[in-house]
Amino acid sequence: MGETEGKKDEADYKRLHNFPLVRHSDMPEEMRVETVELCVTACEKFSNNNESAAKMIKETMDKKFGSSWHVVIGEAFGFEITHEAKNLLYLYFGGTLAICVWKCS
Image (tube, rainbow, N blue to C red; front, side, top):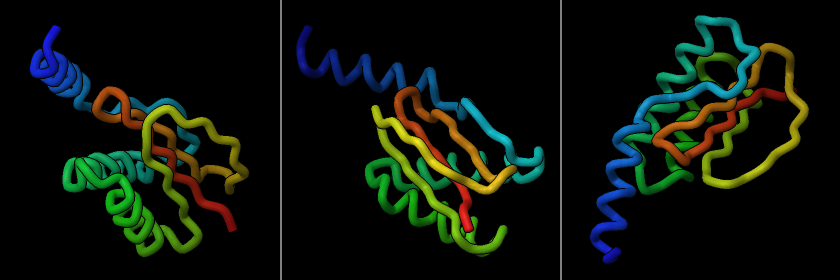
């Protein structure tokens, strides 16, 4: 398989999985929906820059729901966090991209 075929297969895979898949959330429904939409918007806007996407999500969450929000975006990472109850969202987007958003005081 050539390099161009591999890139085409990867693009097809990402197109097939271009929806948010919530892996875990303890947020209230309305907050969860808003946060998922924000994550999708940020990841689409900054598709080649996870740092900028995370910054956009964090700053928006701080303004909307109070301060001390944290965001991690990437592939193949593990985590163990302490968070405020009802303030955690962990989802997959675009097939392999994971996003974890949480608040701690």
